[in-house]
Length: 375
Image (cartoon, rainbow, N blue to C red; front, side):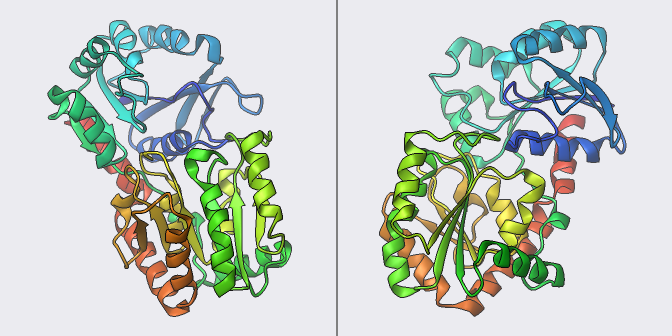
């Protein structure tokens, strides 16, 4: 089959500036390309050629201002059996007009069928033109079906994945060595490390974790929170909210570290040096991919009861879900309990790693997508 995968106009593929969709497309594209003809479309970037073939995948990149128009023209001239569009339901109609005999798949990674993002008429048109709508979580699927019941027989959850060979749990030789090296570099020897990875934005809730810190260090004086991320993907610009976080962190200089944006291929060592992972999202998160990365690295997860995040958590086995997600003390209570139980930390980490190996590797995602493409 000849398959096109279309990224959004926000970030390039490969994910040189990060981005969950970009990581997703590049990973599954390379696996599917082992048996099929795969083209990935994304925006241009100074580090990347406009057209290239790598790992069996043809990459075609267009400037952002004329991005979808350029793709539309391209598919008029190059026939595809399947066109998989990520997160842009409004693109389906013009693309379908350009290639009416192609099977269209829409994957939805956020609430793209909300009232403020698409009209009733445009949403219905999109649904009528696609063969399937794959979503990253049951939660996202429910947001589509609740507004557009006619989509019910087309919506299917296909969870995202991770490359387990890039992440090394602390009980492995490689993981132990990475942990030792990174902790030495960051001055974290002998510390209990709580990790946050994500954009430094209010909806991600890092301020709530900082507010929980006094309670945590009263019970665990050697605890350190490490925040990895920036205001936006690949950018380290500081806004008022980030300044506020830095001000809060400065109150506890021995217990807080901020690390700016880290490229996806460098993140594994920072997971490896940690003891547990916390996702404090305050918005209805579709299902943050950091959950898969934390499990792959053998870290117990504490996550908020928002959106699809709880869907990969088995309570008490690989993590805990915080119902009272706006309350710093709710996080502190669970963090304190886990930091006091080193054996439990390892048991939960091993369960999470096993869960990822069995269900959430990229080959699982690619196989699930191929079933969608072929049916």
